[in-house]
Length: 148
Image 1 (tube, one colour):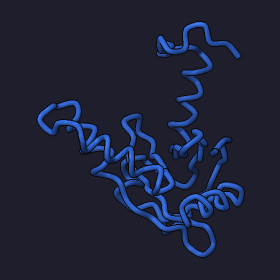
Image 2 (image 1 turned 90 degrees about the vertical axis):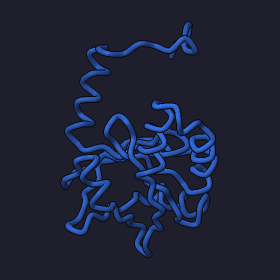
Image 3 (image 1 turned 120 degrees about the horizontal axis):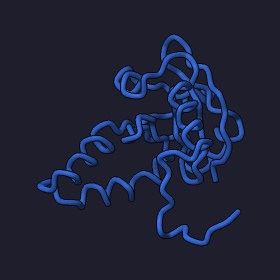
């Protein structure tokens, strides 16, 4: 289970050091093999490779003749990259994905249970502002009556 938000610094080569607690979990769950891909909200998704496979299978089972389905296939599967954590627990973000997510030096790693989101720091702050102001948020029907 991946939880918590961590500010990471990207080095000049595009590498991010995964925090030790998450690195250990990724090594245990996937031997350090992960999938990094684009998300429609402008962030990147980081999945342990075994958790990504059923998602990709579902996406590819959709009709490529449906415009919305093929758009998601192009984005999520088209940008997907297999990455292995290096010996020091870093992952290399390709130039293509860095450009997509507008990564510079500071990146936010945000646990989402089964995976992580990686955000450009300014985009992350905008997301937080939206949530804190309650703008653009419509609760899904599945959460009716939900409380914390």
